[in-house]
Length: 334
Image 1: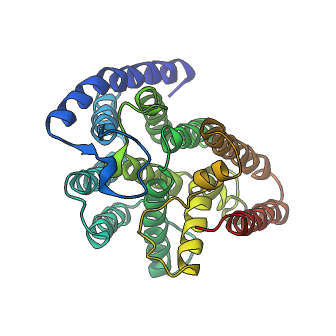
Image 2: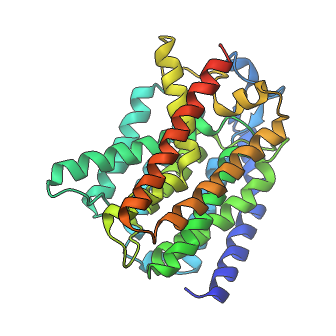
């Protein structure tokens, strides 16, 4: 991968998503694969909206990967198999509204495939600890992206930001296969963003949001910065996906505190609370996108610093996140 090929990949993958958008919209409307606002009290849109985001993203990623030889890379098989499982279970949920248990089964299968094919955490000497942490990471990030998909353009914009950072840093780390996947994801998400931005022509649905979460979780596990100790670089993927992690932590904390079911949808996400603080819907989305950019910059500012300093910076981010959660939780009662 070099700069010229990167631009070519972005052009082609963006074009795929732009061209497939209307096709996916028409097919999903014909199959009645829509999100009906009457199906749940928390729905805020006014009319049934197509859930074509997942199919458009999945097909565009596969087609772009085929053109640029992603099938020749070492991570092709684990990414393809895991992403296929996540997409199919997500599509099943979009069609039939399956139970949280079935969703979890699909996520666990995808995580186990990654581990079996060598994409896993390698922080501990004990394999079982690495396996457990990999499962927690993959399942957690999949659900984080599903949770944060609470407004038009929010989740897919966060995916563009995270994959753009991965694109840049994997060039430095000498991992061209990850650079290619990141570049494809940037382009595909940019194309789909055109249809998912406010007012959305189609939603991502579970199939789209979970697919983005899985691929970014896999990128975070496979990324290996060259020349940096694990103790000084382990936090980088966490910060790159920091906004969805923050949102999920806020929602889980809030619902446990109120003795609500964690998977019960509601208007208690970060986006809704920012709107409650009198930000306009567009500015609330932009605020979360801006936070993601700043966290990404901070991750790579801290990376070359001595391990103690870089981990202190990460600790300060965690502390700020905890304070933010307490403030948002205190300001609004649901």
